[in-house]
Length: 153
Image (cartoon, rainbow, N blue to C red; front, side, top):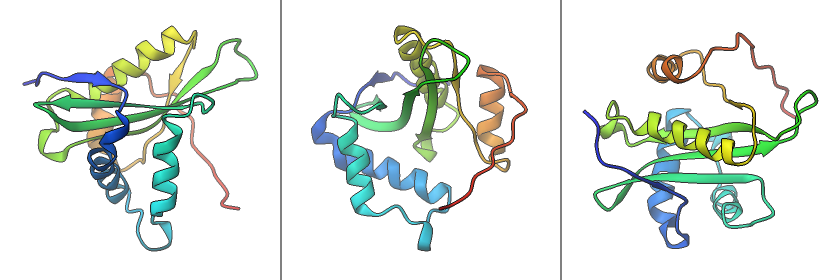
């Protein structure tokens, strides 16, 4: 079953509604203790969505007058492609509404925004234990086989 959605950029007065979803996303990835995303960083992230010089963007999913999902994405250069590459950074849907097409709709909307920007690729990564999300991702994209390494500085 799918629900009727409106996909759009967030409005500046929707901080609290977006923040509720953002908190859910961070809780899902256990960003607690020293990994907690500060209120200062949360506010900075929000403010970046409204700064035309920032490469980070947001789309929210609205159903029945409330926000039920979010996706953040970034455009960046690539050494072997002419157009900007699109990195799908954060994706989260209201846990009570999972399985109703919200995540897929948000991903498809990022695809459309990337096409409009001349991007030849959208990519993202997820944690290997996120089996639920990977079932969706396997339907809408190809697993690249790459493994992510990182070093905290």
